[in-house]
Amino acid sequence: DKLDCLNHVSDACDWKCDTNTCAQKVCRETTDTTCKNSADGCEWDAGSKVCHKQHCVGANTENACISNSACKWTAATSTCEESKCYKHATEAICDHDTDCHWDPTGCEGCKEKYCFKTFTDSASCNADPKGTCMWDATNKKCIDKTCDAYNNVAMGPDRMCECQADSRCVVDRSVPTAPVCRDQQFTQCPDLDVVVAFDGSTSMNNRFGTHPNGFEGLMEALRDWVQALPLTGEAAGVTSTDTNGRVRVGFSEWDQGVRLAECPACACSPAVGSDGDGIPTTSSMNTKGKTPPRPADKCGKLTGNKAQLLADLDWHEGEKRRPQTLVKEAEEFAGETFKSSPAYRKKILLIFTDGMIQDRSSLGPAGAILAAEGVQTFGIVLTRGNPNFLDQRNLDALKEIVTDPKDSHALMMQIDGAHKVLDDFCNP
Image 1 (cartoon, rainbow, N blue to C red):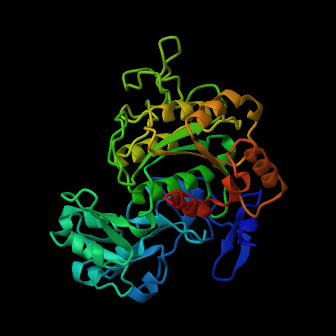
Image 2: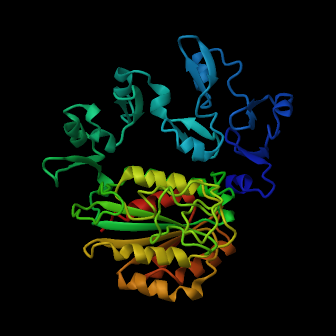
Image 3: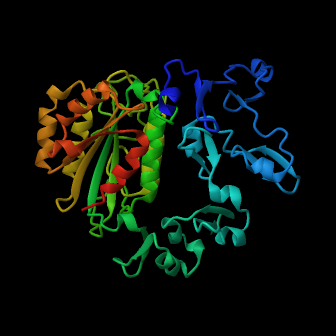
């Protein structure tokens, strides 16, 4: 099937969506010259240094051009050319462009979002027959309609009325002088603090279903979640006083257990050196400085500030993957983090892994701290394709460290299924 094709060990297979068949990949050349000389109609992208199939050559009419999601028609010059999104060679690059998204079917790579691709003026955008688009007056482009977009003052004085009229949204008037448009799915959020601990082992670089790189796919899911969450707006290091059903989040990447990734006790300053892992270090450690230290205003703490969370995910995305699956220090970090969380806030630790956690027998002290803080621990085993006996083994190991009821607190799924699980944490 499609997943078996995309996850073939040879990495030489591609799924043909038009015929629903598995075929050998084309345009696999690794140099400019060999790519351009290929008989498969390939072209070289100098920016990403990737060889890919030519899609838009010969499409001389608008209909012929836009029928291919990789192409964009320019009416002024009557020309068809590759869209800017299609040129993004990886899911990570694609996800950082707000006009683009990674095709979840695994067929088309990075493609322009429907609203951005289809409409170029405010009148046609706001009249979208699907009702899914809205005009961004600040950036002069058509964007996906989201509840959060109504909070942009550029939407005008009637934006809260428009929010109320949108069946997916609701106006939160818990602060009467500052109403906020929120997504209906988050209206039942408790006062919630969440630490998300994700596997940083090298196996996460493999293809996971329709995602060419599992770690990048997970970062995309987390980034989408952060964009939609009703965050408190409180910056890292600030004791939360919010009681309006809003969320704070902290991220922890775990790997070999050779370091405490989030350094809650260290200076966490850009002026501090790095041991090459992007982690600020003490003077007793070497300072190779291969990657910049983690953002000083975040440093692994809980925050309700969207910009800080997105910057932190960017930092994690640039980190090197490690060879093992050890979770002890992530649990220790979570325990220390939740000590500063007010007692009235619900506390959740969510663990993502694709392997068998190897240090389960050493988690007693960290687990005791989490239990004392009233933390509920959930876990998800991410599968590369259809679940197999190894995935089941990994799930059984994960059940040893989550809280009760273990059968519902430890789950196994593909990356795309993580979106719903993340959203469900707002159920009281």
